[in-house]
Image 1 (tube, rainbow, N blue to C red):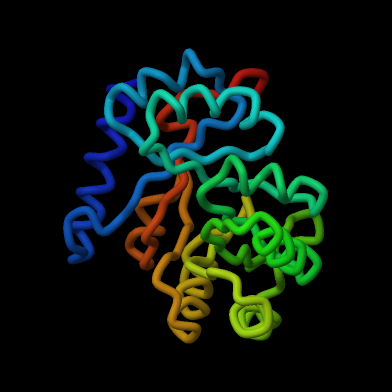
Image 2: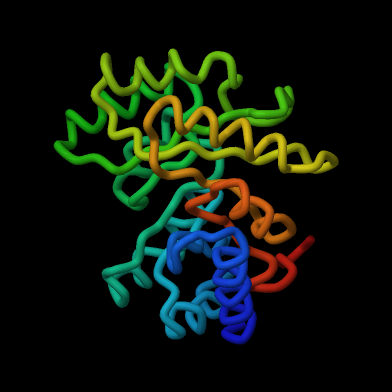
Amino acid sequence: MTSNLMTIKEKIKGAEKACGREDDSVTLVAVSKVHVAETIMPVLEAGQRIFGENRVQEAAGKWPAMKEAYPDVELHLIGPLQTNKVRQAIDLFDVIETVDRPKLARALARIFKEENKSCDIYIQVNTGHESQKAGIAPEETDDFITLCRNELGLPVKGVMCIPPFDEDGAEHFKLLKSIADRNKIDIISMGMSGDFEQAIKSGATHVRVGTAVFGKRPGY
């Protein structure tokens, strides 16, 4: 596991260098969804501190103890968030990468106010217009970002996408980068185990890598 982590970090450095990016300009989000604490701990002990989880309930079952042991961990929600799980999510996660609809944005704004706390949010963009996938349509993203920022006062720090599985990611990465640039958003979360080097070339600041770090997910 730790050798996998080192290999990925070296590949990220190589991709940064290959496209003229500064060292450490790309952040690795190690996707630990469906992996148990015993699998995650060696990666924590090797120094990785930023992790991604897909489900609130699953993360709640394993991360509080690990975050207590490693208080500098930054935990990202990278799966869909139901409005009835918002309160629990903001207690557990430091970043919610999957804000994609006004109803969820309004729920976040309301509960941030009620709880007097917040976390960073990224806007998830459905760059492939896939009906089965979460994310706001690209053509609606600018207005949605304006709603989140100006009306609701949400801390919009980034954008994210998951390109269609059967398409070249390059055009999707280019589209997300253009959305980020025109909305003056600095964080671009794109690229996974199979295409993170291409995503870095396209401007990713965060890459979400699971299988290449932890190995094949149990049950898959």
